[in-house]
Length: 112
Length: 114
Image (cartoon, rainbow over all chains, first blue to last red):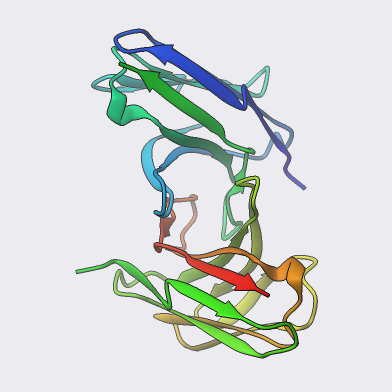
């Protein structure tokens, strides 16, 4: 089955700096790679996703890149703000009704 | 209008008890899931249902029994609760199709077994 590795487990950045979180996956059949943000006491919420036919996707301060050959994908947050502080999860899934397999999460702290 | 709603939000109970968590989604999705998040924040799939039918049952003890009365509801019943069952349980739903799509998560149920 799919295995998703995520690094780093914790990340502290100064407000305004960029943050990068990296994930690798094992199943070459996986074709959907979402990123979720989980704030304290809440459920995970999708912030951006990418499919395997695309190499990069951007939404304002957030971007995701995908390297299918190397089986890794990354989340980039620019101009970080204190409200970006949360736990971020990468995930992967393959076609059909397969559920998302999550990485172990990255706790991002943005220091004002 | 909550998309995926779970009840209760908090559940404290003694070892050996039986408890249920309810989940409802109003998104018209075909597929629903239960995930378990442990104290280290690891999110792990437990069950997946598509149109009321069990699709995936990961290595979960048979004390856990999901029930889907219709495709908008997926409840989780847990028998003979153990200390190790303490965790946050998340219900989620997504639209089945040829390609994987976004999963919407509920707010979670924090289960504490004492």
